[in-house]
Length: 267
Image (cartoon, rainbow, N blue to C red; front, side):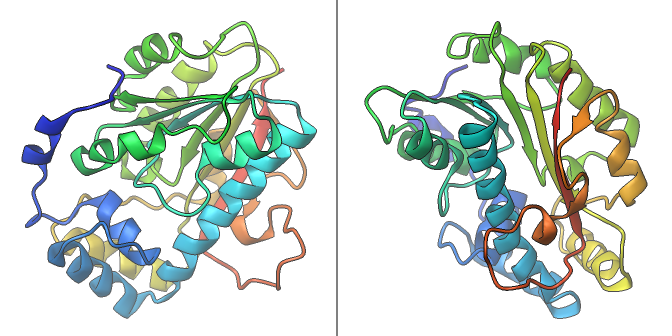
Protein backbone atom coordinates (compact mmCIF):
# COMPACT_ATOMS: atom_id res chain seq x y z
CA UNK A 1 0.00 0.00 0.00
CA UNK A 2 1.04 3.59 -0.44
CA UNK A 3 2.76 4.64 2.77
CA UNK A 4 2.19 8.09 4.20
CA UNK A 5 1.70 8.23 7.96
CA UNK A 6 2.34 4.86 9.61
CA UNK A 7 3.16 5.33 13.31
CA UNK A 8 2.68 1.58 13.88
CA UNK A 9 5.82 0.85 11.92
CA UNK A 10 8.09 2.13 14.67
CA UNK A 11 6.97 -0.74 16.88
CA UNK A 12 8.24 -3.25 14.31
CA UNK A 13 11.82 -1.99 14.37
CA UNK A 14 14.19 -4.42 16.12
CA UNK A 15 17.31 -2.47 17.12
CA UNK A 16 19.02 -5.55 18.53
CA UNK A 17 19.02 -7.32 15.15
CA UNK A 18 21.41 -5.95 12.49
CA UNK A 19 19.50 -4.92 9.39
CA UNK A 20 20.73 -4.39 5.85
CA UNK A 21 19.31 -0.89 5.30
CA UNK A 22 20.69 0.37 8.61
CA UNK A 23 24.11 -1.25 8.10
CA UNK A 24 24.31 0.38 4.69
CA UNK A 25 23.30 3.68 6.26
CA UNK A 26 26.16 3.31 8.74
CA UNK A 27 28.70 2.64 5.98
CA UNK A 28 27.50 5.77 4.20
CA UNK A 29 28.04 7.88 7.29
CA UNK A 30 24.37 8.16 8.25
CA UNK A 31 22.87 8.25 11.71
CA UNK A 32 19.82 6.02 11.23
CA UNK A 33 21.37 2.89 12.73
CA UNK A 34 21.81 1.07 16.03
CA UNK A 35 24.69 -0.56 17.90
CA UNK A 36 23.97 -3.98 16.35
CA UNK A 37 24.13 -2.47 12.87
CA UNK A 38 27.41 -0.71 13.61
CA UNK A 39 28.92 -3.89 15.03
CA UNK A 40 27.96 -5.83 11.92
CA UNK A 41 29.24 -3.04 9.69
CA UNK A 42 32.55 -2.90 11.54
CA UNK A 43 32.97 -6.69 11.30
CA UNK A 44 32.68 -6.49 7.51
CA UNK A 45 34.87 -3.40 7.22
CA UNK A 46 37.60 -5.04 9.32
CA UNK A 47 38.22 -7.65 6.62
CA UNK A 48 36.97 -5.62 3.66
CA UNK A 49 37.51 -1.90 4.34
CA UNK A 50 36.54 -1.08 0.75
CA UNK A 51 32.90 -1.64 1.72
CA UNK A 52 32.69 1.97 2.92
CA UNK A 53 33.95 3.18 -0.44
CA UNK A 54 31.49 0.86 -2.16
CA UNK A 55 28.61 2.45 -0.25
CA UNK A 56 29.65 5.95 -1.31
CA UNK A 57 30.43 4.96 -4.89
CA UNK A 58 27.11 3.15 -5.27
CA UNK A 59 25.27 6.39 -4.57
CA UNK A 60 27.45 8.23 -7.09
CA UNK A 61 26.53 5.56 -9.64
CA UNK A 62 22.84 6.12 -8.89
CA UNK A 63 23.24 9.85 -9.36
CA UNK A 64 25.02 9.47 -12.69
CA UNK A 65 22.53 6.90 -13.98
CA UNK A 66 19.49 8.97 -13.05
CA UNK A 67 21.05 12.09 -14.55
CA UNK A 68 21.74 10.25 -17.79
CA UNK A 69 18.20 8.91 -18.00
CA UNK A 70 16.50 12.20 -17.14
CA UNK A 71 18.74 14.50 -19.16
CA UNK A 72 19.81 12.39 -22.13
CA UNK A 73 17.25 9.60 -22.48
CA UNK A 74 14.21 11.74 -21.66
CA UNK A 75 12.90 9.43 -18.93
CA UNK A 76 10.59 11.17 -16.47
CA UNK A 77 9.34 8.17 -14.44
CA UNK A 78 11.38 6.12 -11.98
CA UNK A 79 10.50 3.00 -9.98
CA UNK A 80 13.19 2.62 -7.31
CA UNK A 81 12.74 -0.84 -5.76
CA UNK A 82 14.49 -1.48 -2.45
CA UNK A 83 15.38 2.16 -1.98
CA UNK A 84 16.82 1.94 1.54
CA UNK A 85 17.17 4.83 3.95
CA UNK A 86 17.26 8.38 2.56
CA UNK A 87 20.73 9.80 2.15
CA UNK A 88 22.58 12.19 -0.16
CA UNK A 89 20.81 13.06 -3.43
CA UNK A 90 17.99 10.57 -3.57
CA UNK A 91 16.44 9.55 -6.89
CA UNK A 92 13.63 12.11 -6.81
CA UNK A 93 16.02 14.95 -6.01
CA UNK A 94 18.29 14.11 -8.92
CA UNK A 95 15.49 13.53 -11.42
CA UNK A 96 13.34 16.53 -10.46
CA UNK A 97 16.34 18.85 -10.59
CA UNK A 98 16.52 18.01 -14.30
CA UNK A 99 12.83 17.46 -15.03
CA UNK A 100 10.57 19.15 -12.46
CA UNK A 101 7.62 17.04 -13.64
CA UNK A 102 9.40 13.73 -12.93
CA UNK A 103 7.43 11.07 -11.07
CA UNK A 104 9.20 8.74 -8.66
CA UNK A 105 7.87 5.72 -6.78
CA UNK A 106 10.06 4.31 -4.02
CA UNK A 107 9.55 0.73 -2.83
CA UNK A 108 10.73 -0.82 0.43
CA UNK A 109 9.34 -2.95 3.24
CA UNK A 110 11.79 -2.16 6.03
CA UNK A 111 10.02 -0.55 9.03
CA UNK A 112 12.71 2.08 9.66
CA UNK A 113 12.78 3.00 5.98
CA UNK A 114 9.02 3.39 5.99
CA UNK A 115 9.17 5.60 9.07
CA UNK A 116 11.26 7.94 6.91
CA UNK A 117 8.79 7.80 4.02
CA UNK A 118 7.36 11.21 4.84
CA UNK A 119 10.79 12.76 4.24
CA UNK A 120 11.09 10.98 0.90
CA UNK A 121 7.59 12.05 -0.09
CA UNK A 122 8.53 15.71 -0.15
CA UNK A 123 8.77 16.83 -3.75
CA UNK A 124 11.52 19.16 -4.80
CA UNK A 125 9.21 20.66 -7.43
CA UNK A 126 5.49 21.51 -7.47
CA UNK A 127 4.97 19.70 -10.76
CA UNK A 128 6.55 16.40 -9.78
CA UNK A 129 5.21 13.47 -7.79
CA UNK A 130 7.07 11.39 -5.21
CA UNK A 131 5.33 8.41 -3.62
CA UNK A 132 6.20 5.38 -1.54
CA UNK A 133 5.05 1.75 -1.77
CA UNK A 134 5.27 -0.55 1.24
CA UNK A 135 6.24 -3.67 -0.68
CA UNK A 136 8.67 -6.56 -1.03
CA UNK A 137 10.50 -7.10 -4.31
CA UNK A 138 9.53 -10.78 -4.06
CA UNK A 139 6.01 -9.56 -4.91
CA UNK A 140 6.54 -7.59 -8.14
CA UNK A 141 2.90 -7.83 -9.16
CA UNK A 142 1.85 -6.02 -5.99
CA UNK A 143 4.52 -3.38 -6.58
CA UNK A 144 3.34 -2.84 -10.16
CA UNK A 145 -0.28 -2.60 -9.04
CA UNK A 146 0.56 0.12 -6.53
CA UNK A 147 2.96 1.92 -8.87
CA UNK A 148 0.21 2.21 -11.50
CA UNK A 149 -1.51 4.67 -9.17
CA UNK A 150 1.34 7.14 -9.79
CA UNK A 151 3.19 6.11 -12.94
CA UNK A 152 1.88 6.00 -16.51
CA UNK A 153 2.66 2.52 -17.82
CA UNK A 154 2.15 3.61 -21.43
CA UNK A 155 5.31 5.75 -21.15
CA UNK A 156 8.92 4.67 -20.42
CA UNK A 157 9.85 3.90 -16.82
CA UNK A 158 13.29 3.44 -15.31
CA UNK A 159 13.21 0.38 -13.05
CA UNK A 160 15.97 0.50 -10.42
CA UNK A 161 17.45 -2.29 -8.28
CA UNK A 162 20.37 -0.64 -6.54
CA UNK A 163 22.47 -3.18 -4.67
CA UNK A 164 19.49 -5.01 -3.21
CA UNK A 165 19.15 -8.23 -5.18
CA UNK A 166 22.28 -9.72 -3.63
CA UNK A 167 20.02 -10.60 -0.71
CA UNK A 168 18.21 -13.06 -2.99
CA UNK A 169 19.91 -16.43 -2.62
CA UNK A 170 18.82 -18.04 -5.89
CA UNK A 171 20.00 -16.43 -9.13
CA UNK A 172 16.95 -17.70 -11.02
CA UNK A 173 14.64 -16.08 -8.46
CA UNK A 174 16.61 -12.86 -8.84
CA UNK A 175 16.22 -12.97 -12.62
CA UNK A 176 12.51 -13.77 -12.26
CA UNK A 177 11.94 -10.69 -10.09
CA UNK A 178 13.62 -8.49 -12.69
CA UNK A 179 11.85 -10.13 -15.63
CA UNK A 180 8.40 -9.89 -14.07
CA UNK A 181 8.79 -6.13 -13.69
CA UNK A 182 10.47 -5.51 -17.03
CA UNK A 183 7.78 -7.49 -18.89
CA UNK A 184 5.15 -5.02 -17.70
CA UNK A 185 6.88 -1.72 -18.42
CA UNK A 186 6.65 -0.46 -22.02
CA UNK A 187 9.21 -0.37 -24.79
CA UNK A 188 11.75 2.38 -24.21
CA UNK A 189 11.89 1.68 -20.47
CA UNK A 190 15.20 1.05 -18.72
CA UNK A 191 16.67 -1.30 -16.14
CA UNK A 192 19.24 0.22 -13.78
CA UNK A 193 20.99 -2.40 -11.65
CA UNK A 194 24.14 -2.88 -9.63
CA UNK A 195 25.23 -5.51 -7.15
CA UNK A 196 28.33 -6.67 -5.35
CA UNK A 197 30.43 -9.09 -7.37
CA UNK A 198 32.63 -12.05 -6.47
CA UNK A 199 35.73 -10.41 -7.92
CA UNK A 200 38.09 -10.69 -4.95
CA UNK A 201 38.88 -12.75 -1.87
CA UNK A 202 38.42 -9.86 0.57
CA UNK A 203 34.87 -9.06 -0.56
CA UNK A 204 33.96 -12.73 -0.18
CA UNK A 205 35.34 -12.70 3.37
CA UNK A 206 33.31 -9.57 4.04
CA UNK A 207 30.18 -11.36 2.85
CA UNK A 208 30.92 -14.21 5.25
CA UNK A 209 31.37 -11.76 8.14
CA UNK A 210 28.02 -10.16 7.35
CA UNK A 211 26.27 -13.51 7.62
CA UNK A 212 28.13 -14.35 10.85
CA UNK A 213 26.94 -11.08 12.38
CA UNK A 214 23.33 -12.22 12.25
CA UNK A 215 22.35 -9.94 9.39
CA UNK A 216 20.64 -11.21 6.25
CA UNK A 217 23.37 -12.81 4.09
CA UNK A 218 24.48 -11.09 0.87
CA UNK A 219 25.22 -13.38 -2.05
CA UNK A 220 27.90 -12.14 -4.40
CA UNK A 221 27.40 -12.81 -8.13
CA UNK A 222 29.98 -13.32 -10.80
CA UNK A 223 30.08 -10.61 -13.45
CA UNK A 224 28.75 -13.18 -15.92
CA UNK A 225 25.79 -13.97 -13.68
CA UNK A 226 25.00 -10.30 -13.29
CA UNK A 227 25.13 -9.88 -17.07
CA UNK A 228 22.38 -12.50 -17.40
CA UNK A 229 20.02 -10.12 -15.61
CA UNK A 230 20.15 -7.80 -18.62
CA UNK A 231 19.09 -10.51 -21.05
CA UNK A 232 16.88 -9.20 -23.86
CA UNK A 233 17.79 -5.59 -23.09
CA UNK A 234 20.21 -3.25 -24.83
CA UNK A 235 22.99 -2.08 -22.50
CA UNK A 236 23.99 1.54 -22.97
CA UNK A 237 27.68 2.42 -23.06
CA UNK A 238 29.91 1.45 -21.32
CA UNK A 239 27.82 -1.67 -20.70
CA UNK A 240 28.10 -3.66 -17.49
CA UNK A 241 31.08 -2.14 -15.70
CA UNK A 242 32.54 -1.54 -12.25
CA UNK A 243 30.31 1.14 -10.76
CA UNK A 244 33.25 3.52 -10.39
CA UNK A 245 33.86 3.29 -14.13
CA UNK A 246 30.30 3.81 -15.37
CA UNK A 247 30.31 7.25 -17.03
CA UNK A 248 32.39 9.09 -14.41
CA UNK A 249 31.73 12.82 -14.46
CA UNK A 250 35.10 14.46 -13.99
CA UNK A 251 35.59 12.75 -10.65
CA UNK A 252 39.00 11.74 -9.41
CA UNK A 253 39.93 8.29 -10.60
CA UNK A 254 38.30 5.91 -8.14
CA UNK A 255 39.77 2.56 -7.16
CA UNK A 256 38.32 -0.69 -8.48
CA UNK A 257 35.31 -1.71 -6.42
CA UNK A 258 33.88 -5.23 -6.27
CA UNK A 259 30.55 -4.06 -7.60
CA UNK A 260 29.28 -3.87 -11.16
CA UNK A 261 26.32 -2.08 -12.64
CA UNK A 262 24.70 -1.06 -15.87
CA UNK A 263 21.80 0.68 -17.55
CA UNK A 264 19.87 -1.12 -20.28
CA UNK A 265 16.97 -0.16 -22.56
CA UNK A 266 13.99 -2.36 -23.27
CA UNK A 267 13.53 -2.54 -27.06
